[in-house]
Structure formats: C-alpha cells, structure tokens
Length: 430
Ligand code: ZN
View 1: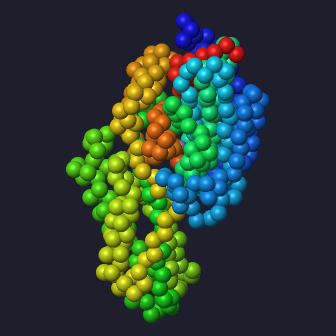
View 2: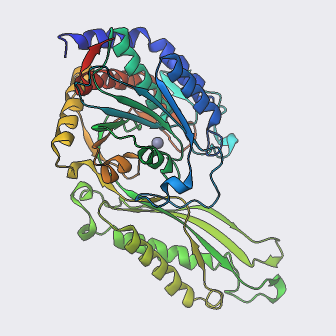
C-alpha cells in the first residue's frame, strides 16, 4: 500500500462525512420492512450506478435457492424480494477480491407510541442518529459505500474485484445472501458491518423459527372444564420448551466461544394469537418461537428434539392429546458459524488486515466477541469457504424502540473499512 495512504483516506472520509450522514438519514427514512424494501433498494441501486458500478438487480427465485445448503423455508411466494449488487471490476486484478455485504431489510417498528419520535422520520441528537434500521444495519451499508468513495477520492480503486451487496431477508431467513451465492458471487473475503460496537465477531449462533398451531372443539364458556382452552393449553408447551432451552445451555454443551456465557441460547415466544370471542372458549391458538443453537449443533437434531418436547407434553394435556399440535417451520433454518474455527490462511490474513486497519483508525486494539444472534456471515463462511468478518458501528436498541447508531462510531468504521479495502485488495490508479 502506498505510504501514508491511510492519512489521505481518513481525510477523505472526514471531508465526505456530512454527506454520508445525510445519506444515512435518507436511507433510514425508507421503511424497508420485509416486503417493502424496493424504494430503499432503488436508492441503493441509483447511488451505485451514479458512482459507475455495474448494477445487478434481481428478484430472488425460490427455484434458484431452495435446494441449497443454508436455505430457510418461506411460507408465502416471494414477491418483490429484490437484491442489489454493484460490482467494481479491477483492471489489474493484482489483489484479493472482496464482498462488502449488508442487509436493507429492517424489523417492524412495533407500537408507535413506544417511540419518542416516529421510527421512519430519522433525526440526530447528541451525536446519535435515531430511527428504525439506522443501526441494523443501514449505517453499515452506508459505511461500505463511503469507504469505497474515500479510496476513489484519493485517486485509487481496489486492485481486485469488489462486490457491494445490498440484500433483503436477513432478518427472517438469510435467503437474500444465499441468492447472491447462488448467482455466482464469491470472493476471497467478506465484510459485513453489522452493529456490534466496533468488535470483530468471532462466532455467531444459529437460529430456528417455528410455529405451533393448537386447535380443538369450540364451546360456550359456561361448559368449559379446565384444560379445554386452546390458549391456556399453550402454557405447558411453552414451559416445556423453556426447560429444553435450559438443558441446551448447560456447561457441557457450550463450545469454547460460548463457554463463559450462562445463557447464550435464548428461546423467544415472539408472537401469539388465538381465540375469537371473549365468552367463547378459544378453539385455536398459534404461537411463533425463535430458538438459538450453538455453532456445530445440527439443525435436524435440534428440530427433532423440539418436536419431541412439544408432542410429549401435548400427550399429557387433556385438551391437546386428542388433537396434537402441528409444528410449522417458516423462517430461519440458520446454522451457527464461528470465524474463530476457520484455520485457513485467508481467514488469518483477513483478520490480521482488519485488526491493523482498526488499530490505525481508532488507536485501539480490535476486541473480539462471540454474539448471541445470527448474521448473513454464515453463508459465506459455511457454504462458500469465504471468511466473513462481521465488524460494524456501535448501536443501541436494535430491534427495540428508539433504535440509534453513534455517528462517530460510523465514521471510525468507515475509516477502518477504507483502509481494510486498500490493504486487502491492494490499490490501482483510477
Ligand atoms: Zn442486522
């Protein structure tokens, strides 16, 4: 790398930072919840095209991905699930190629009265940008884009191909990232700036989503005996699932990355519906569950145990034994992934490059962390042999109310990313 390039890169990041924040505000104002990502994707495609990248924009097709490892089942057919990739083609091809990945989808805002200000009218206060998706993970998408800009403003381009990916479906299946792999996008490393406090993520959990459907004969409340209520019948099932959660978390089951965590695997009942009328005994209920698994834990055996726990408990229940619960899988079938277990030369080199860039940009050593969530990193790491570095800005209340991202942290991440690109890919004159 050119001597002192880092000082020029950091300078260019600083010079463009106001525009970068403006763009983050604009991007966050698009309410890109699942099914409504198109306007935000249009904006991303426009921004990439304006900068001269080759644009690939396509609708995810189940036929292209449903046979692939890592695929997660979806109930509804895909409609308007569009991925956007902008490609930089190096003229010299001297360096190592790179995928810069981020997801455009955001989780629902929840009850609006829980927010201090409207979630899709982002605003800045005290050095933080507030708004749904600002942290998870539009600040990362914006950081990737402006890191490339900084290199170009210095008169350089990456000396290897770089694929800028803005994908859908990260928050429910990961099928957007999978569709990028299926379309042939591979590289020597991937960087995903998910908001984990400027730490390098060394391991992430797997996640399984399932729905439990309960139903039985409706009756008037006057004739209801105990145990005949489809809503109350869910309670023992939920309790049994939590017992399973505690068993999975015991010390002996924990891989090294999670040895210090008493409760890395969390079971969440995230949605509940049931019944039709206050004075009718509910004949049906449905609840949605998210359960985590450790890296290395098999999805098939986890599912078999979940099913066994539910059916065994149901057979002990007066209401359920005559009409056993139906278990439906849709959404995450995500395996865990541990970058720490990747012993390849490429992985070591990518981590060393990021470590050095982070140290230069922030003056601090890079902290490593195992997280209790999943990210799209698993697709690159598990199914394409691409070491995937998850490293992004500090954010708070992601998936919660008053989600926010620290702007100075986004600046640091952008500087690190610019330097990482220059070092990993090498540079060529524009
Ligand atoms: Zn995210």
